[in-house]
Length: 393
Image (cartoon, rainbow, N blue to C red):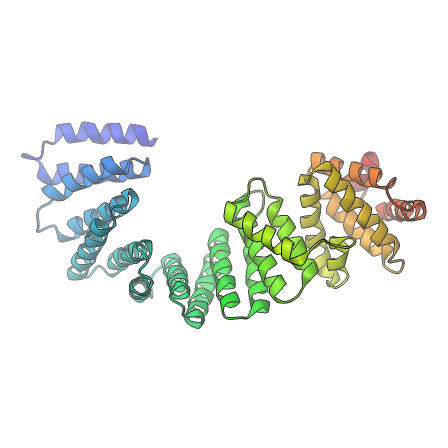
């Protein structure tokens, strides 16, 4: 059943249960109507329904009134009525405490922490999230991880970088146990920021690397771009210019990256200055061989998304750089081809065309040498991949 049908049925139920005769049934229907309206994006109407629900639930139904208050707080927060939302969450927590409903009380206190962050009161948010973590302890792992994530972020905003790192590490550990990739990515990205603030850039690189892996470019491009831009910042802090440049470029290659991400990545590239030679080869020169596949794949995805002129320039720099590395030409060419065959057909064609055109832009000896090595390395691939590559070239 879709939300519109659910809302229609709930309105019919309200008419069949006038509040003067059926106060509890009417209040219950108003609660569910408010929930459905909030899910549909109509927060103002949700507030009206939830206030009506609160009006008709008897005081003796402590737990039910607390649930309404908690949801009403969420609706009021959505409308920006933050003081009223905080009051609802506070009262809901108190009522849940009276009934001994620890997990529900934790949810209300957590929601109160969100409001404290909304109004910029980082210390009050820290206290609320810390209390929520205590109340969630021993329960399901997902709420524990979410509370730890927000607690750590609030600690970071309050200037306690070591406390933030500890909380965010726990959030990351819990997210891994739950096996929720999006939660892993959020916790890892926040942990990376805490490590940067604590002037531990190498630890930040590890954390942002996890965040990138947890946010596939094709599934969550905005989060991928953010993690890549933050990774570039961490690499810059370790004086790893080549990797910082590559990560910043890849952050910008996402379709319509968030404004903050674009500004950060562009600022990094401006500080680093223009590259001399192939940025990809500069990274592969110092990377262990087991890191080559992911490094090449991510960069070829960027090539495919880049304007044709830039793509051709990258291919020319690759050919020239490969020619100047005679002792590693074959293994580097193979790594490039392995990244190439993982591209979708349209992207594969775009990169191959750029590579073929780039042969006219470089020293003829370099072009012939790289062409010969690339053709020879195709032979190591299984027949379907070999035929696909040969057809394109």
